[in-house]
Each structure stands twice: as structure tokens, then as C-alpha cells.
Length: 311
Length: 311
Image 1 (cartoon, chains in turn yellow, red):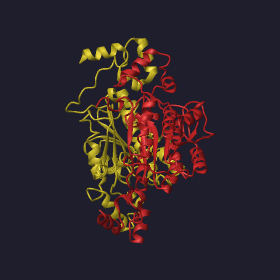
Image 2: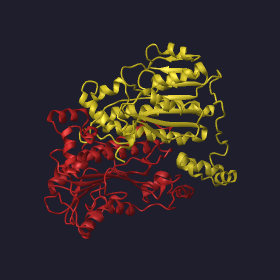
Image 3: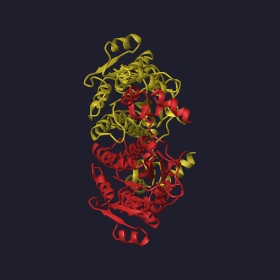
Image 4: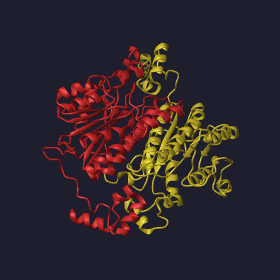
């Protein structure tokens, strides 16, 4: 194995490095007479106790949306496992609950509060959360990012306005978030990120083009990011939900008012029911708690079997 | 089968229709007491002679980029098969060559000329081509769309500017093109569309985030569009190339000047060579010539095996 690695590096033309670094990287590698990974030790498997980036000696998690959907449940899971927490857009009463559940310290970062699903389409929004986490705890280990704009029409009726909104909030927001959270994790030598996207980013939802298309974009963004930082021991995955049982989802579809719509909706779902956001949180936790550092660049649906209907 | 269809319609809750039409469609269907497809006959298989939409009685093809990459070869293939042609951004001397090869009539639509890869990011660009085709030939059967902006950086360095350019030209341009070409095909009762995207829309290219991500978006756009018009006998597919042997590709990577870059590039490609644009055109033709109307909503790589490296 190490001989293979050496041969690879000696060529200055590591296959993986060309795709990551492009022509400029190849030129540099060629000039230096070695590949780009020469100085890198391969990441090691986690031991019984997961690594800790925070200078407090306590594992620390960021949850960018602790208001809606799976964020509050994830925060509670972290609290039960004695994590320090950095949370934004926070559900009423949640910080006290997290402390009672066992979180040694809870930092609420203001400025991201909003009605409805989170929108971090502006550069710098998630950076303020990261800066606050670094200042208070000197590092963090696990990051859950949720950004969302819900809407759209079919291809024949879709509008430039919807597409731009979806681009800003379902795609660019993910880029800005990754650009904020990845550098400290790379610098620290490891960590995990889960981005909540949508099952419709993998399986087309033809009646919601702008949503489905920009969730596909966000999924690819996570995959590109994962490959970029994989040799730095940082894992990035996307969890794509659909049919979550929370008020926003039912309201968007009108299913909170019309039982016919709810009936049609349930007929789409192999499992025949809406999903609980606590279920999605339970799944995401297995990608965030540091005990499995060998899954990265993937998209995972939590959508009642929707992604495989018709197959 | 017809009994099943009837039961399905009677419920007013056709599974497919909910995803296509959303809550508004369900409400309408419920009010009418029937599904949305009641009046539709199922599409029929093509006979030995493919259908013809044009009032000239001659099959007619639109090629939006007849300047670069596979467009000129596709136009020549159509000409050999005696299609009328509607072409934009045209290679010098191509119209005469198409007539010599057998095209009864060649319509050159001005206004899309440009240096480098095509950019139809403005609404209405492809509409002018469609309008010209309808006016001259009264219909068209086959459409090849190419739009492209090439560039990007890795996730840690990617810029808002690159993302917006890629969004406009690799994603929105595809939406505008589909919105221009689909209505006449739906109205006429059938047709085929191929959109050239990129193999990096399926397999991540981590060094070119804005490109890879917006090609993933375009692929999803094609899949959503395909599902929307499938029961109208209109097929939409994406063909994603990579490593095409034409000047623009090599220049973008710097491979036209530095043999080390070309060597690194070839090491990425299982087939060990660049692909000819004529090969991509040959493949696309099988999705455009009307003899197979049972493939839609797919993404096909023409990329030397790149999409399966590492698997």
C-alpha cells in the first residue's frame, strides 16, 4: 500500500488530485516533483472515544436551525450525549430543555431568527455562528445545516423568480454554510457535517421544478465538498427528507386543510404515513456523533420509501 | 389495463398526477370527480416511419448550437437522413454542406452567434429559434440543445460570481430552452429533445464545484421535464459529455499547451483517450430520430467510462 502511494505521488499526477486541483494543481505538483498528498498522513479510524476539537475537552455541535423540522430533536440528542451546543433560530424554551437534558453549555447565536423555513442565502449568515462557536468553545466537531425555500411549478410554468429564490436559498446557502464550517474542521484535523436537503433532489418532483432541481444541486455540492476534504478526515453527507410531519410541510401542500390532499399525499408514500422529524434526527445522529468516520459524500433519503417508488 | 386505468381515474387521486400537478391539481381532479388523464389516449409506439410534426411532410430538427462540440456532427447526421434543419450559431460553410448531404431545406436563425461555448441564459433566446422553425416549417420533431459555461473552483474557494454564471448559463438556459421547445411538441402530439449537459452532473468534479453542481441541476431539470410531458409522447433526455476532443475543452484545462496536463487528463479516463464529438453525436441521434420513443427522463454519459471510475 505505501509503495503504491509512493509511486502515485512520484508521478506528480495523482488521479484524485487532478480532479480536485485541476490544471493549476498539476502544474504545481509537476514543478515540485511530487503529488499533493505527500505530507498527509491518512486519516485514522475513530477509537472508542471520538475525537474532540473543542479546547473545552467536550464535544461540541452546531445546529443552524433549532426551530423547525429535525433541528430541535437533533439538539436534544446532542444534549443527552453531553455535547456543548451552538444553536441558532431557536425554538422557545429549548435552551433550558437542552441544559436539563445534560448539555454542559448552550450558546444561542442571534441574528438568524425568521418565520418559516430557514433562509441563509446571504453570505456570512452561518459564518457568524461559526465565529461564535470558535470564540466560546475553541472548536466544534459536528455540524447540522438546514436551509430551505419551498415552492415551485412544473417545467411549463416554472418562473425565473422561483428559480432564483430556490438557487439562493437551497443551493447558495449550502455553499456559504460549507465554506464557513469546513475550514475550522480541516484545520482541527477532522469532523462531520450533515446538510438537510430533500428526497426530491434525488428523485424528480416534476410539479416543483425549482425545488427539486436546486436540491439536486445542493446534493452535488455536498458530494463535491466531501471529496475535497475527505483526506482531511472531514465527512460531509446530505440527508434528504420528504413527507415530514411538521406544520410547515402540511401547510405548503394545503394538506392541513383538505383531507383529500392528505389522502393523495399518503398514497404517494410506500410506508403510508408521514415521517416524524425525530426519526430523521435519529438517522442523522449516526452521521454526526464521531463513531463512524468512514461514510462521506453520500445522499441518504429519509422519505418513507419515496425514492424507490416505481423502481 | 383499461379497467385499472378507469379505477385510477375514478379515484381522482392518480399518484402520478399528484406529483405533477400538486395540491391544486388534486383539488381540480376532486371537483371534477375524475383524474387528469381521462381524456388522454396512451402514446403509441412508432411505426416503421417515424411521426412528422412539420406541415411540410418532412421531419425537421432544431440544433441550437451548430458551431462547436457535437452540434455540427448532429446537423450533418440529420442532413444525411433528409431532415429539414433549423440551426443557430452556425459553423462557417455548414449550411451548404448540409444541403449537399441531403437536407431539403436549411434555416439559419441569426442572433445566437457568439465566441466560445453557447450561452442562452437570457429568456427568449431559444424562443426565437422555435418561432422561426414554426413559421417556416409549421412544426419540428427533434431538438438538440446545448448551452454551456465552463469554470469553477473547489468548495473552499468557489465564488458567488461563478455560481451565478453557472446557474444562468448551465441551468436557467436549459429551463428557458425547454419552455420554448416543449409546448409545440406537446401540441403536435410527440417529439424528442436531447439536452447536452456534462458527465460531471452525475459524478462529482470537486475542483469545478459551480460547473458540476449546475450540471446536476440541469440533469434534474430534464428529468422533471420528461415526467411532465411523458404522457404527451414527448421524450426528454440529457447526454452528459466529458473529455471531448475539441479546442474549447483542451484550452479550458490548459491541455493544449502543457503535455503534463494532457497526460494527467488521460490518466483519469478509463478509455485512455479523448472522445470525438462525432461519437457523442452518433449516440444522441438514437434518441432523436423518432425510432425509439420509449426512453425518457434519463441521463446518459458519453465520457470514456469516467462516471464509473472508482466503482
